[in-house]
Amino acid sequence: MAATRIHELLALRAAQTPDAIFLHAPQRATTFAALQSLADTATRDLLDAGVRPTDRVLLVAENCAEHIALIMACSRVGAWSCGVNARMSAGEIAAIVERADARLCYYTSAASDAAHQHARRARAVASALPGVMRCAPRPGATTEAAEALADTAAIIFTSGTSGTPKGVMVSHRGLLHFGRVSAQSRALTPDDRVYAFLPMTHIFGLGTVLMASLSSGAALVLRAGFSPDDLLAALAQQRVSNLLGPPTMYARLLAHVDAQQIRPSFPHLRYLYTGSAPLDLTLKRRVEALFGQPMHYGYGLSEYAGSVFLTRRGEPREDTAAGYLVDGAEARIVTPGGRDAAAGDVGEIWLRGAGLMQGYFRDAEATAQVMRPGGWYASGDLGRLAPDGALSVVGRLKEMIIRSGFNVYPAEVEAVLNRFAGVHLSAVLGLPEADGNETIAAFIELEPGAVLDREALQAHLREHLSPYKRPSRIEVLAALPTTSTGKILKRALVAAS
Image 1 (cartoon, rainbow, N blue to C red):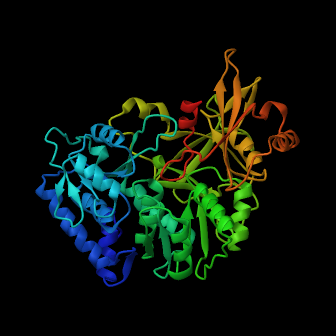
Image 2: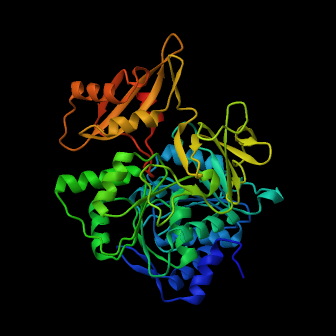
Image 3: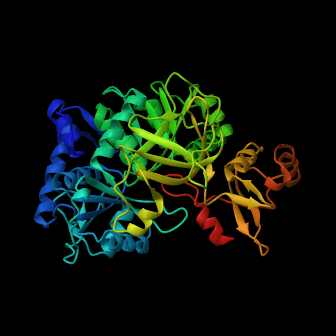
């Protein structure tokens, strides 16, 4: 019988292969049966605290077995887990507690110093789950009455790269469906091991990593965060076969390998994937050269419980297209007038299908702003479809720069900047001018030890970009600000400009 709730995947694995190791963590290995036992304990703790169906349970966490157990326990009691990265500030977490109207807050204090500090500030006490603390239940929290929301599994709070985070209501159906799609796209089996540093508080970690691995029986080499040295050791010694992460993770890995003059060993690696942010062609080629195999790419978002487009195994691409529609998904490229764009033209990406969100939590206005007739979700992303159906994402609708009456897509300018010697990462955005025009500003992070030759860079830009696309302002930063999943925080750059 097919699973209808995400916790049923773990129960199935624990029943079929109880002694198989699912989590390979630095401190200990955890079998499916042991993880199920932790989920049992977490379930009892939730019920003892009076948690009811549709209650929101905040999980202030970094990746660990207890975090996964709490996600599964929330599913069992019908509560909605709300994962929050423990590295967020106390003020940010407090705001999400209020926004989620959370009944209960848990902290994975043993696995995360940051979570432990948050727990101390909140005067949390020990829960029944070892190494996890929780606050007293909030008596004013209210449940949800809408029957249409009964399938909600979790609330994913968007990273807020361009505004206030919104609570995306992700369904059991969507997570289960994408878990199968992701596992099939990678041909995952119980023999695979996935390097799992991506936060499971984010849809990339929750869907592409956790759900896909539970669907297939693959194991996780579980980490609380990213370290180039740890990744290289895991590739060499822990049979890692799948490596997934945002482009910035690969960029930092390349910088580390070059600076330390390392020749990586990866005897079991067979699948490379990146997502969550635009992919630069120069970076893709460098990663493929390092590992000697294709780099896969996809387009997805929290509002769709995972990827909507994925590249295909056995069909390596020479470009940075995000591949093809996955099973159960539909997409349109739409003009500002609401019509389908002509083949090859740029328009807004509209989506619908099995993974589409239930809406934004208690925010009917924000939900209405992105939903269109016929159940279509207007993503705010700009893209074009090739004749073969492959999607190329060209930027964000809100980030598109209007310069002298021309449209400028930041990703195009960033791709040219990233090809220049010594440039490690770049971010381009438009800043308003007094006459209503926009000036193009570029922020650059250099490779270790590199010094920017501004005259040579200007010559490079003149060679590859039309005059209206060239940045009039270029700043070098020690490091570009990023979210926990590797997205460059352009909002922070605007605020500092």
